[in-house]
Image (tube, rainbow, N blue to C red):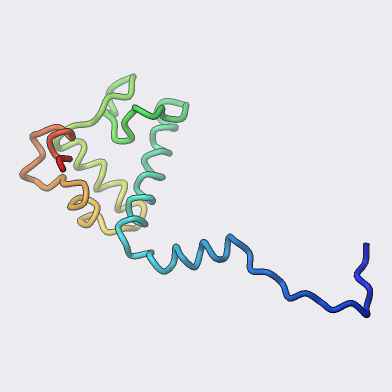
Length: 116
C-alpha cells in the first residue's frame, strides 16, 4: 500500500546491525574483540579438520595429529593460539597473556593455567 502524500513521513529508524557495529568498533582494540576473532578462526579450523561443528565440551585448540578432537597441550597449544591470533589480525601477545599461556606455563595443561 502506498503512503499518501498528505501523511507525515516517518524518520527512518536506525538498523540494529548498525548499532551493533558501532559498539563493536568502539571496543575493537579490546580483549573481547581479539578473543572472538581467535575463537571464530579456531572454530573454522575445527570444522575443516573434523567436518562438523564442535560440541560444547570439545576443544577449539586441538591436537592436529589426532583423528578425534583432543586438546592440544604445551608448545602446540601456544603455537595454535599465536597462529590464530596473527591470522585474525589481533594482538597475539594480548591473547596469550589473557589465556595465561606464557612460556613458563607451557609444560602444564590448560586446567593448571586457568585458576581463579
